[in-house]
Length: 226
Image (spheres, rainbow, N blue to C red):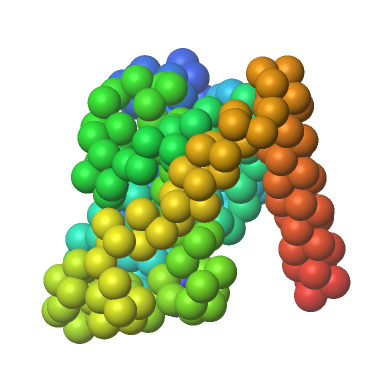
């Protein structure tokens, strides 16, 4: 559900409003139809173009519209927006693997977002995207819209989540991390340090390649539709 009108502002670095925004923030969605993009920061963002940032922020607007403006957890918002056009680095993949092995809950994601540091925020984005991706894998791509629709009808987020998925948000997070906890438990027992790192690098590289291919396919589809 997209707003009928979207107002986009490109904010240069020398604008006083830009100086009030953390340096790692590249785009903001505000209200029901406003998007602010800081184009000079795009190269520092996990996306490679203004187009990617725009899609990310429009996803926020669409999700808010589906929820009728009612609040949704930050991890849910960012995970959905990241799923539209994610592009993580290899080092980000490695850190994601190890942080998943700790089994963070959704409250931990909230604390990472609130920490105010770029590394913690980047990790929170990656974990949120992985959790939403697992939800969509198990329940279908429309699961996030169904949850937001229930919230828009006045149902609390946790209850809406349970109605659609038949589990709590923390249980879903535990399920998403479970495969990583299992994997990191048996790999060290079967391999030496060098071989283990090679396996981790291979897994991360393969996941990154798959995401890049899917992004290219989506863009070709959008170009054909235009």
